Amino acid sequence: MERGVESEPTRIMLAVNESSIKGYPHASISSRGAFEWTLQKIVRSNISGFKLLFLHVQVPDEDGFDDMDSIYASPEDFQAMKHRDKTRGLHLLEYFVKKCHEIGVPCQAWIKKGDPKEVICHEVRRVGPDMLVVGSRGLGPFQKVFVGTVSEFCAKHAECPVVTIKRKADEAPEDAVDD
Image (cartoon, rainbow, N blue to C red):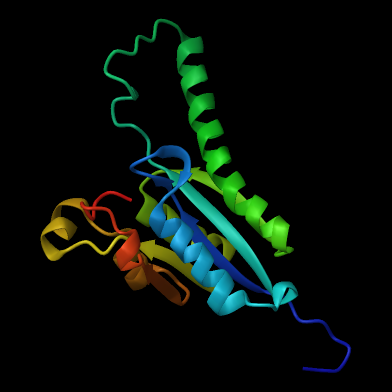
């Protein structure tokens, strides 16, 4: 590198999701762990050398109803539901963006809808980060068959290096599916 020429910061994409226990706007244990690991082990004190890119993928509800007793009687009801979902995702991303701004790490955040593993890999192709960091719940082989793992899919299919961060043993809930 030539003297006086500034290099571009290393761009790290973090795929984050909401807690399955607490719901929105709480970040999952795995997402928080991946974020904290990235700050402690990669960014460290080189704040200007990195830019964090937060992607949250909202999974569309198959039937369009979150609650069994919900009644939608007009087009406005569905618009309100879409607005509520987007707002929930924004509050989740706000947690990570706020933390970055507190310590001075440049960042961006956005929301997409769809199958998380497919959308994450698509966004990696579109954005071209230097690295993808994803959290892992640490599912056993039996649970993987039924639940599937986003982290394994991304490790195989993302077009950049992928770092998978496991939850700490003391943070794991009784059921590994919970996060």
